[in-house]
Image 1 (cartoon, rainbow, N blue to C red):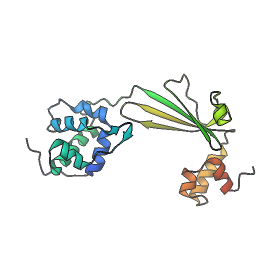
Image 2 (image 1 turned 60 degrees about the vertical axis):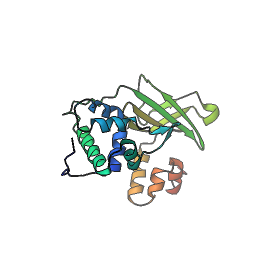
Image 3 (image 1 turned 90 degrees about the vertical axis):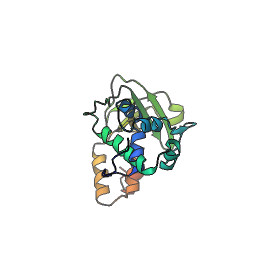
Length: 208
């Protein structure tokens, strides 16, 4: 059955494909529901996005070659799939995540180490002290404080990134750093990419 050609296109095909492949497990729930894009979606989900653990973006042109469809049809199918994903509650799609992974990032000067676990009885909070005695030979320290916690989501996993710093948490510093960025005392790169020691040195606070 041909697709209706009067659809309004709100998003780019490239961005739609990017979002859909990042929801691969969720998108599978749309299969077998009598959707006009069912065959296309089955073909799309078979495309490999990883080769030897290296991410390889699949282009719209490659999708054309794999499916034998012309670009206008691919664009419309991608929009239809995306609209159904946006309306996941109405379409009874389950976006629940049942797995979690915690990654502790610790460093001292230029030495870094990472610890990844799948379960924690208690999640440390920002400002709390954490002692990890496993990698002292590499990092040079065992006691840290939690500087920040960042949550990331995939279509099958919640990832909690916990950034650890050496020393003692200073409640004033995050406020001062934000103030410096808003006032132009430090650049975007210095704010987001540099560590605390470098930022404090720029602001003349390294002596305190």
